[in-house]
Amino acid sequence: MVNARNKTAILALGDTNLQDAGTGQYLLELISHLDLPDTVDIYDCGIASKCFDGNIHEYERIVLITAHRHGDAAGEILFTTIVSDIESVLNGLPSPLQKTKDQLITLFESTIPNRDVEWILIGIEPKCINPGPSISDDVIKAAPKALNFINDLLQESAHNQTVT
Image (tube, rainbow, N blue to C red; front, side, top):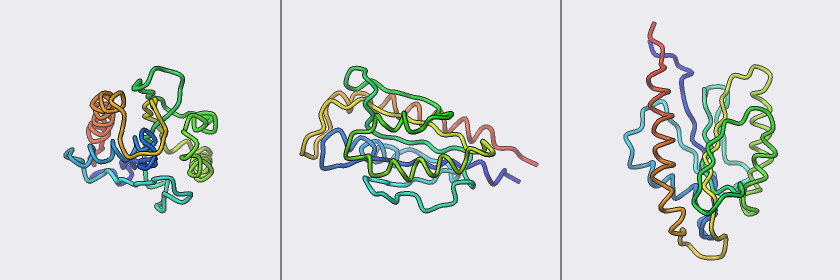
């Protein structure tokens, strides 16, 4: 029997009307072409204040994919495990994505007592957050590397499934 809790949720944050702020949805479109295991659920959070309606504790891992201002050059990827201070990590979200921040903090804090859910952020430094539907070349060039991170996580998770 496969461990029922060995699941991953991918939460894509983004605003497709503001160029690189739509990075999460851009990556989500690319992920949809991968052969995902059935232990992966995908949530298109957009900029909604309520983007996740599942049971957070049924997941072993939550992966946030998004544009993220972390001070590097445009297109650079931040891959980090969120251990304690999710609020400071989420401060790097472009302002249109801040609506999801409170919900993500609440979800994260609900997992703290048992440390039973691993939180990971994969964020690409945006070049421009202006009205318009196009993603910058810097983000487009970074996308394959971000997909490799995601794929490696999913493969690791599938490999770690326990059989009894």
